[in-house]
Length: 107
Image 1: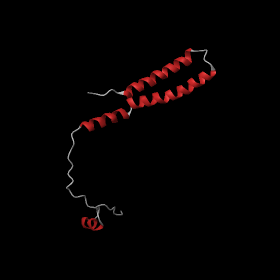
Image 2: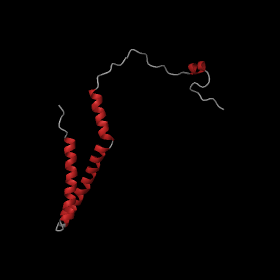
Image 3: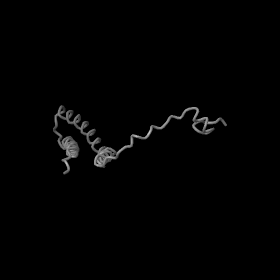
Image 4: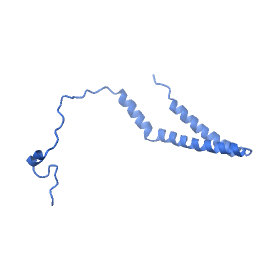
């Protein structure tokens, strides 16, 4: 059963709050100057919230969250740890292979 997604509800509240503050600022001509300043500060905060909501749902974060969910649901794959670690390339290996193996020859 899928759990309730609070992120979408909070995102919708931010968007509706943004439009409510814009509506109040536009259609309420008798707002006191102190209340108007508070509403403008609130509007600035809501603009950043709406930007983040838009970026999450239409940007790469939603796809990344879905990828993480799919990877967590995938069956576990056994990793073979018995194989030896790859050996470092040393000077004697380079000399044995000849020119062009890890070294640039001057032209």
